[in-house]
Image (cartoon, rainbow, N blue to C red; front, side):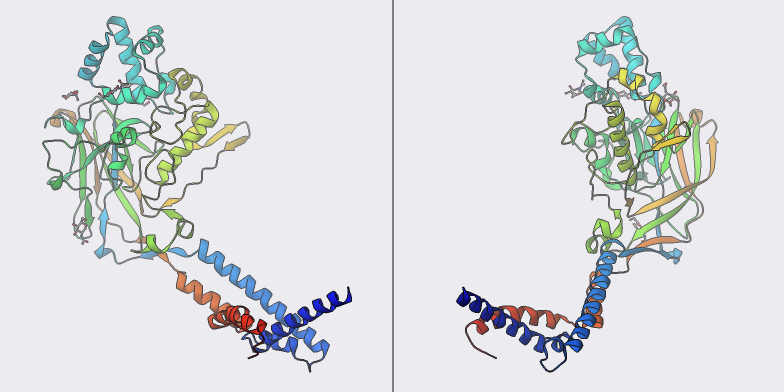
Length: 485
Ligand SMILES: *[C@@H]1O[C@H](CO)[C@@H](O)[C@H](O)[C@H]1NC(C)=O
Ligand SMILES: *[C@@H]1O[C@H](CO)[C@@H](O)[C@H](O)[C@H]1NC(C)=O
Ligand SMILES: *[C@@H]1O[C@H](CO)[C@@H](O)[C@H](O)[C@H]1NC(C)=O
Ligand SMILES: *[C@@H]1O[C@H](CO)[C@@H](O)[C@H](O)[C@H]1NC(C)=O
């Protein structure tokens, strides 16, 4: 027993000696006083307290640097050299208020033997279904024949959107006269048929690219180009600069009775609750625009949590192959609908996601959704004195624009003049300020801050850290074999 104890003692004293050796040599200044034999115990104790305090504050300061680096390393600055900017114009989304294509519907009915009253009622039903959104689900008609017809056609709620898509004609493909097109007078700007929360609509002047097109979100295929048009002469997006006078474009070619227009940032999708108007005439909107841009290397040098914003391709969404703030809130709305009504409306991309959610039948759309329309649209349900808020945490778009409508006017007679409806956006005053996301606390700053803190409190440095490893690896190894340096 006693030999065992003495051998333990021997080991402990060896370890103590080695640590004392390190303390005597190491770069952290106070340590050597802890092991200096000649000092009084009280003095050593005092040094221990001082060292502990230093280490404590060092750790606290370092943690605050780490926190700053991880969550507050960017800021938004303001730029005012407005002559140089290339300002992208706002985006327009137009939803035609007449959805189905008559000849396609006729062909479909012929092929599937739907005639007479069934056919009329199916037509009305599908038209309303294609035109439905959170504000008007109650308008979906309920005919006796519908259940039966849908059953015969083998249409489940999962197929609603595909059927509507099949029966809708992509009007950007029409021949010259009835073609939906977007033009600034001399150039054409690309128009894409997209799937929104208000069914199939057309968007012009957007940065979102073809991943946002209806055929891509529904079937994973990029939309086919109109054979007549040469894509290479088409502008993807319209820019303006300070010295240009009034710049704008018109999205035109709707041969429907009425259209619904949404104006929004070219970096985002439309928002259902910012409707600029249901019109039976063409309309013109004058807008002001303010941009949020980023430093060129922001994306590479920072993570999402550091910059608190996402780029288009950094999607963390389940139903959309891209990220924008509004598509994130759409997904939020969809999840809310799923929570409340146990199924989601048909106008969301659903078939190509990992876990498709059940799609609501038209009966549930009529019975469950109108009751909660306020909650779904505004994420807020008034309930007596208390409201019910559902939080939706959506990061900002890194690049974005803020649109302000300054004037809206109706183009009377445009229907007669141009034989089609449209909306135009016009920018008369260029922005004088723009915002820029910048890194103010980079990785180098972070290292310097850590090093500075360690140096300030402990006199510690990178070489000191290497020395620590050296002491407790190579030097320990030699020490065990009896070499004393
Ligand atoms: C603005 O952007 C357009 C389109 O990308 C480009 O052709 C043009 O050269 C740019 N102008 C300036 C001043 O950067
Ligand atoms: C309906 O679709 C056909 C092609 O299927 C197309 O030629 C026609 O122009 C469309 N009609 C309308 C009014 O868009
Ligand atoms: C489509 O819905 C909108 C908004 O609820 C409504 O104003 C419009 O009349 C509907 N269209 C048709 C053809 O019923
Ligand atoms: C839609 O059209 C495609 C291709 O023509 C077809 O395969 C599909 O079955 C159609 N979907 C419905 C629901 O009719």
